[in-house]
Length: 179
View 1 (cartoon, rainbow, N blue to C red):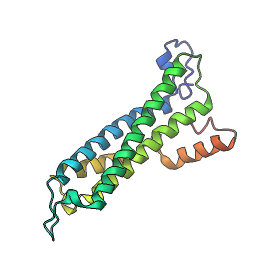
View 2 (cartoon, one colour):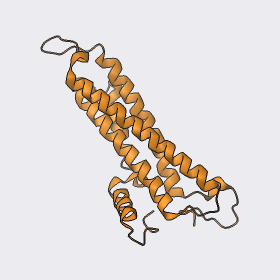
View 3 (tube, rainbow, N blue to C red):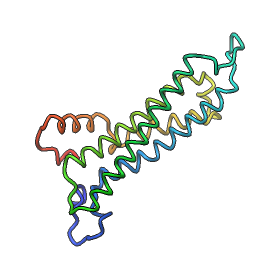
């Protein structure tokens, strides 16, 4: 069963990894990269933005400083979760398949939560970027839209993965069909 990483006649460790956990991680890697770019764009434009009413530099806004700090932390944490998945996959390839249910669930959770952190971070930045961020010419709106679309992929479905993680933590049986 390719979903759990057991394919008869396949001895290559990479191909013995669970498809859903690997696909979720691959998708999430792209989402983290987009979020990092969104953060860069926000910082870059905020450094030169002026308040429309007061003319004050936006970099002096405590609210925007907080948005940047929190988004940066969320994106950094998302990246660390993707790295943790790579470590889980490396470990799984050194052992006989299949990857144990709890590890598969952890990898799916890491990917879904990392994607959700990136979505939240990008939403926070987009909200602080002003109305011009919604214009087609503004690259940040593309990042915002693409991350929101990416996080809706079935492999990163936050509600389902949240349920699976809760079941693992509580010791609820019969998870294999969900991951």
